[in-house]
Image (cartoon, rainbow over all chains, first blue to last red; front, side, top):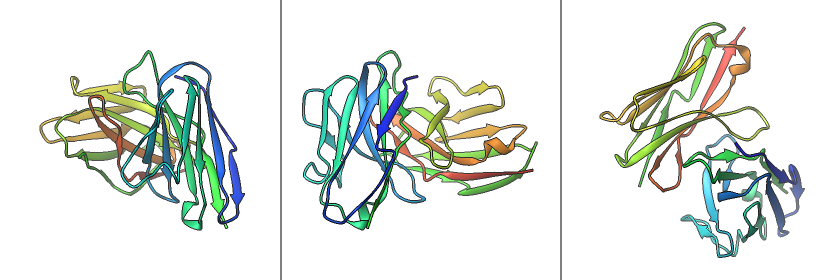
Length: 115
Length: 111
């Protein structure tokens, strides 16, 4: 498995501001994903972070609200823009390493509270 | 698209007893079925998975069974311990496609 770190681990933000979350992996990985987990809920895929090209967003998520970057095979960022209290969630990065297929490993998550 | 249901939503067992969580899926093209354990304040941890070419897989106290005909798969935990208390998520994935997660089961192991 891969070792995944996320920064920040938690944050409290004001309405209307933006927060950028970083995901760092200790080895090169084929795929990186961003998920949202609302309080007490399951995991919902936001987008697939593509290295060197635009992310692929799931239905209900748009680039203007959740811009994503992936400059290389070990790093990605997710920005939550123009935040509202409804954006309060855990944001999770996951990876699918090169040597395995379909197995996804998750980072520790970023706990976001929007006031 | 794929839809995954999971039951029960909450489960309480006495320490030492067995726990079983069941998931059903809708897309017959799904061929990969992982189980994740999420402890409070942590990210989900992959604990076991099964692919559609096998019917059962075991790893110490944890086992997963798959019934492709009925489109369901189950997680079995034997000799439960307090540290097994967590939220468990199942997922299903067709070849080369993204995961669809179940709603989760909150397992409490009572000492």
